[in-house]
Length: 180
Image (cartoon, rainbow, N blue to C red):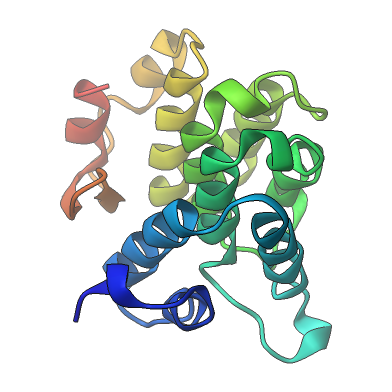
């Protein structure tokens, strides 16, 4: 199946997909396909899909929001604060928010809350190595010196999955941070 051939409404369904790689790939295609008012409306729709009260919680919504925002920075300007604030929502897949912050680094660097401070705070709070991997990568994309965090986690043996823009890598956290 070629995701590039699908309409945005069908691509959104892949943000729910159980295969994580399809969530990432669908979000990337979605981001390239929508522009202007359609981009704004889809960002609003995806934020709504993060609300469990709607009955259609979408695990990949943060990825879709980020990719649409990355390709529509003028549209995303009004959403950047809300997006960074998703790190405080324990119901959201926060590793996807961290990944999105990395993808949106130039756009969100002056957001409120400050994405660097918020990511550092969450690295201390969220003990999942996978979240920490995406958060460290995002900090690096934001231009932050992360030597203190590399030193802190350099011996971690935890296995993580990390999407590198092409595929999902499975490696030890310590090996991942050595590549940063």
